[in-house]
Length: 317
Image 1: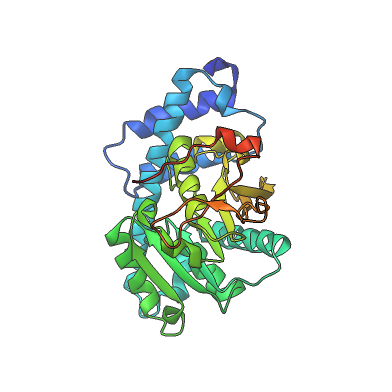
Image 2 (image 1 turned 120 degrees about the horizontal axis):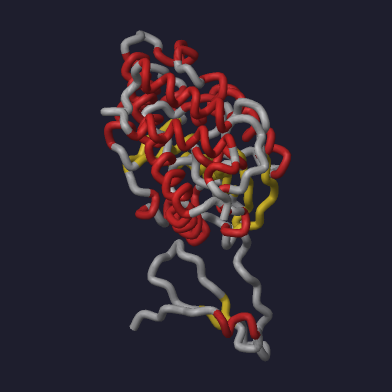
């Protein structure tokens, strides 16, 4: 494990964490804005550091810091969503948000990665973790995917209400944008309808929770559908959870991109693997397991395939 004092970036991050964790609240203010801006600037430069190899104490600091960043980001977006809601046409003033240019660049990056790795223009898109300011959906819907329908999922009803109120001021865009208040882990059959699913960086505040979400998406997304998710690399992993491409079970990873500019998040694009094909046995067809859910995957089972010996199947009586 790496000693916390052996890397000046780690040392600086720990100093900022100590100051941030002592703040009374994380709502936008002069002190909050200053500390988080300094934190972002500290973590932004490309850095070969591997956070997984840091000592346990720093791992705990990083885990708590990511939660603090997530809380502060949510409060910042809520604050500006309220301000935007005071305008007659709020979508014309999105650039008042201090990180709006980053979202413009990130959305363009994700659109370019999507078009390079897929041949079909998506018709129906889900964004998981859209928040009170659904910037990615707004930018993609108005600049890049102007015919697609966007379904935004967030567990916070207030965040969805604020976001929906902003979109409702545009009668054309509101026809293509829907908001769902739900835990994505409770969404099942509906996931098969989406050509592309975007997973926000702060859905799953640690690797274990994020892997559970990805496994859930792998279970219910349609074969061939595209998953776009955000991760972090180097020192930027102090700001957001990291997802290893090897953890995307049920998906074929198509590309991984680590930005080196002010776009903080790494981008991973993957394709949901098709259902396994099985040759008929002795001309009598494949063996399949029954499923109560009409949209659930039906896994073919071939007793002659040794790989199936390590799979576990839960059968209901």
